[in-house]
Length: 108
Image (cartoon, rainbow, N blue to C red; front, side, top):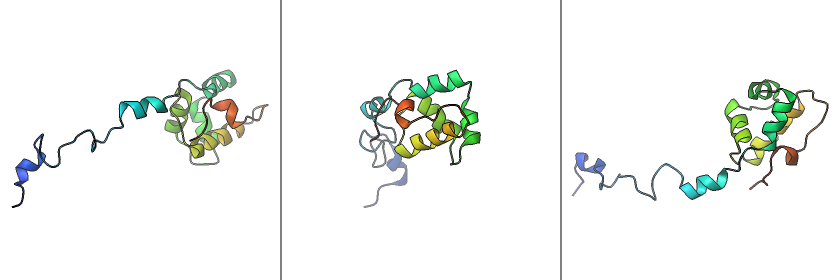
């Protein structure tokens, strides 16, 4: 017998969100991806650069959101880290930076 349409969306119905099927990450997973403010943030402040400067100079498709997450310490993929590195080095600074100087965590 099919489930009546209205019953499907009740708190205990077949489409109810639960801990296994929810759309949000678990608190442990989210906390493990937060690495604290990164050296990238200090470098950009010392050089007088903003997120938009990196986005403009980037040879890749880099977004403001990626740079902001990188500065705040959200763990980024290696691909996103490399985009930020290439953008920073494209800004014409005196120094050429390495990935290990921008982020204090390893890649996954």
